Amino acid sequence: MPFESLARTGKFDPDFRMPGFGVLYYPLLLLFSKPTACNILIIIQLIMSSLSVYALALTVKKLFKNNTLFYLTFTIYTASIYSSLLDPVLISESQTTSTLIFSAYFFTRYFDNYKPRELIFSGAMLTWTSFLRPIFTPLLLFYFLLILIALFRSKKQIWPAFLFLIPFTLADGAWMTRNYMHYKEVFPLTRTVYFPEIEHSHLKPMIEFTQSWGGAIWFVDPNAEIYWFSDGKPCTFHTGAKSDSVPFPSYIYTSQFNADSLKSLKIMLYRLTKDSSLSSDQKIAFERSIVEKFNRYTQSEKKENPYVFYIKSSEKRMHDMLLSIHTVTKLYINNFITWFYTKYYFIVLGLGIIGSLLMLPFIFKATPQSILAIIPLFTIIIHPIIIRENENRYLIPAWPFLVICAAYCLYWTYKKIFPSSNIE
Image 1 (cartoon, rainbow, N blue to C red):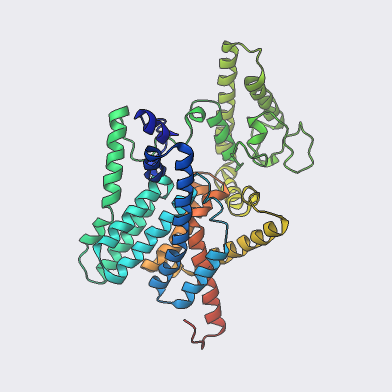
Image 2 (cartoon, one colour):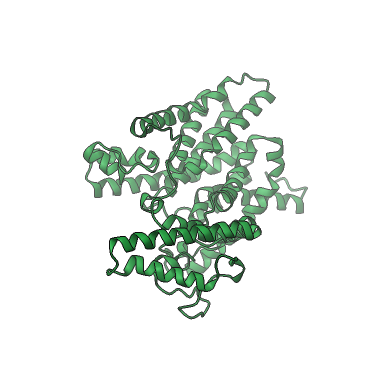
């Protein structure tokens, strides 16, 4: 961990990830032993998560001036354990989810009192979010534009909107300066999306090939397509296929590769990683050949199967991201709880997606309420389509806002069925 290295030696290494996680972790490492620091950090994550539940409900209440939506959001989100499953785990999802909620909360508070400090707080929380998960950095632009438009419409001065950008400008400016001092290059955010051992080996071309037709790329998941390549073990994907068969759809093949080509490539990978009799020169030759094959297969997919490369692969990744929650359900206690919360997840997901579409008029009008739909729609689009990832856990930071959209869907439906109702 880079922050453990920083606390021990004064060097932030490895530094291929942004330092958002260290905002809390690094000070704790300076004060306590590593086990104690980790335990305290988990407690802090749980506290932040608990506070964010109420902040989320207040956010929707302030934006819609509606008590029913407040109680619906609070109840649905409290009953959901999906986004809180990773609160006791030392990865970025918990803090990212909490800071994203707090950013929206202070964003909405500004339109209550128009106090500039609320924009600074909102900008600071969203900056923290982007330093935890750089993929959310474009949300800074969405927030900023909504603030500008709201101020312009209300005929107020627009200069407070720029206060929102101060935290990110200062933080990213310091981060870029640090990176330039070390590498003599400008890195506005992260240097790479891959671990160094992936970036400079056959693993990166392997990932890119698997992504080219929509395969899952989480190496440790036996259900992921890349697993068939990554460790040389047979993987049937629950299809009943023989261990030596290729468990991939036939529509991915091109003039450059077929099932036999992939079998041959798998044998080469096995020898590269498992065969101790290979000399250093032979390993280098194997590595180069494997990289060349993966790159050639990927390019052929892109040129010969553009529909698969651009459309069908994105559809598959989106399907997997939204519907394949097997890695999460493993954390549940028993079969009934697994069944219940799986059904609960799909119900909230469905209502949330419908609700986000019902909120499209707010987006078209660029009102502050639109941020509630922008966040989940942005998350669902950016991961499978733009960065070509399909892990279900990437949906977690957007889940609270899908809950708001689900509450809005229920409220909207009720008002359509009972238009004379006084509920509000």
